[in-house]
Image (cartoon, rainbow, N blue to C red; front, side, top):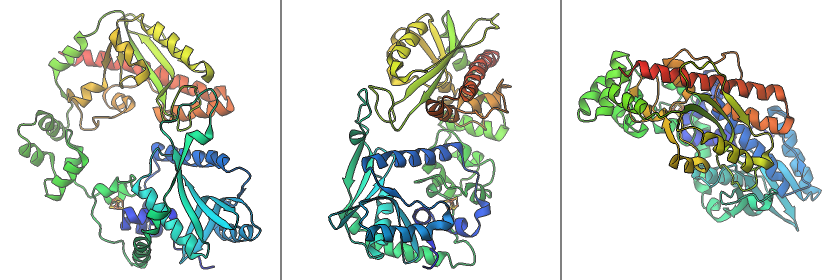
Length: 473
Ligand code: SF4
């Protein structure tokens, strides 16, 4: 068996951008560091895939132990099929020097069905292309498929006491659609292989494809020649609008400002970038501060969106408040934030009720992001001040802060945050990941890191509020 040139992931990479495929294969060292977001996304996809195997129990897993062991997996798949094994996980196939691993292969009554598992709530065009490639390789390797289904999470499922895996996932046959995509797949494989023979990377300019369908991991390399500051840093424009301007050689904030003379947000943003200074709308900040009624407190919520629900009455990907930090807003306050975390998922509703009752002791709560849907009713009784709105509405514009930046990015730029730089929990995503692993391993030490993260964040919010007051005059 000749070594493969393409795999499922490199094929999809090439479909997004041929240059990305080339760089990945030939200049791997130019790759950006994997972001926490991407790493956790892969982890979630992997975990959901493993979990979904329970839908088809008793299978044999032939996943290669290392990338170089792919040949063994392919050979083992052939052997298991000859032995009439009913369920194979991660079945390996190679054809025309393209290698794929299928999540689940069902081999019953002399017919085979392919199943690909996705952790998403719907089927995207990329998933269809991915399935079409697998069909191409499996069929080309000599195995006839009777059906090909994509199994994904049903967003309408509500967990009721116990998780019902058969209701959590939904299965959609895509056989007809992917059979009709075979010509496209064949041509794309041909083109991708040709590109890999190039001496230099193909000339492809930056564009929306750098982020769609996935953020490319060669952005650091390809975007390094975009002049700084650039149109891409300007607030008040979508990515596509910025790219359109860039394509039309309107690349600097000065040119953008001239083009959008009647747009206050864009003008202020361009000015902030050119002057390298933070823009403040002092009147709007004053107005925000004046909404405060006592007693007030800073509230930082720890929120997660588990793909697989573990709390009765919740849906997949529903926002779950698993902890909160509350720091009273008192001038003389040297107090520590009050910290609560969900220790017993089965008591979630009681946890939320106790939290709501406690929050009602305050007239104003200063938050960063908006509150999740199950706390929205609180807005009828308590005044919420969202600090993020100051950035979204352009009342504060800083060249280094995006409109939807996290509070940690804001604090890092505008105040001296208390945050412990040595901590492994530096953002909400990592905190939620640790909390999820705590549910499995009950490692109290890990949870302490989450506690410290929230504690510092609540204190930083108070610091930021003082900073705001100082900048409102
Ligand atoms: S950054 Fe953009 S142009 Fe560069 S390889 Fe990635 S997708 Fe292609």
